[in-house]
Length: 339
Ligand SMILES: Nc1ncnc2c1ncn2[C@@H]1O[C@H](COP(=O)(O)OP(=O)(O)OP(=O)(O)O)[C@@H](O)[C@H]1O
Ligand SMILES: [Mg+2]
Image (tube, rainbow, N blue to C red; front, side, top):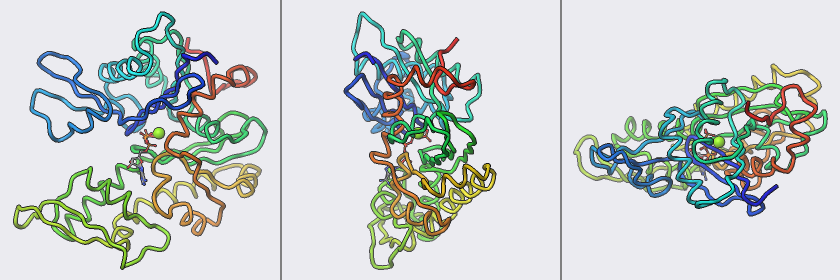
């Protein structure tokens, strides 16, 4: 691995970048702000995120990745270019880049990712499937003929996959993840308290109060917003039990999807998974009590990966060191040279 090799997890909510042996060097919201009059990029990442909902008409604040794939080519290209510049500056030797893509990605979607990375100044671009990267990032040995299950709960999607021999055996994706949970919290506050709250508030409530395993009436959180009845600022004391009710349907949809993947998998692999357990990655893995709820409901061992939010990116960086094993020997090699 060379020290300017770059690994990128291009997520719906966050972009995480690794560089050479330094590991993770950047983790910021995948947001870009640009001036539509001058067509110039104003900010990316954290700075652009702060502008959401506070921008004048001629400034567009956008998320060029939705549901794990690029939805706006030009903006994605500009955003990746800005981030690479941020960490690497102008370099004589252009970096090699590995970017991860969801397991279900189409050829057109992969091409968009490769084109974006190429035009952002990379010498060579490789793609890796997210579940494989997540497993490598969690330091699980996936080279053997043994099944491992990974559930990556991001902002846009929850990706469930069974990985064996460095490749994805089965996978399933649902569009219920962190963002959908935030929307459910916003809806709950509107319906039950006639309180209008924004996305950033919903995010704070979710991170500060969520307990999916043994929610209590006594643990509460102050939620501030605007009263729909009076039109004025107002606040409500929300309990863990109420928050559980607000996000119950989403949580159970995720567990139902896991159950379905287990049901559809070959019996040998399911046996392995009962031994190895299930690994949670992505920001959604940090939802309070989720791993315990999954263990209790599905009767399967479940753990949260170390540094769950950066796991996929870390694996992307580590994949440079495993390129020869990942490239050779498998027909559908999970890391491949883009032709
Ligand atoms: N402590 C936490 N508790 C609950 N959820 C969290 C926590 N921290 C982050 N999240 C959620 O994790 C999500 C972002 O996770 P992540 O960075 O893995 O997503 P992503 O990779 O950008 O998205 P995707 O994989 O869907 O493209 C957000 O919805 C955020 O609200
Ligand atoms: Mg992700």
